[in-house]
Image (tube, rainbow, N blue to C red; front, side):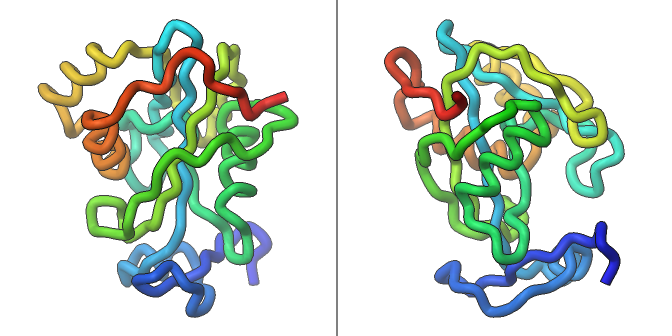
Length: 180
């Protein structure tokens, strides 16, 4: 096995592990697997969005959650969320932030069961160039207008997340941070 080759847990409709498979095969066959998304808010109530690297195999160059990624085979959701904060945003000492809500595995999420986490952090971030092209802080009304006019600018799973956020309160003020 190639040391750099990614392996994911393949799961059933109840998110129970059935076995393991290579990343490419999971995506090619549309198998259910796991991912995490972390939404990072600052004290002004703005959400940090990342623009995905142009070299990404899925959704290159579009805007996405603050940090997101696949759960590796044998890895827990919370460990993945903390790892993605470190890898993509450079948050050393990151621990899993608060779980907020869960998405079912559907075609719109890329057949990924997704736990969505929320974190309050002011930055700055050290973006990983191989994963993240850029990023910025955005107010809810700005994202709402952008999403309404150009939904194709956003990764599919983030559009699903945004649909859930539209009916929820915006988590600002008094949030506990998950980074020490």
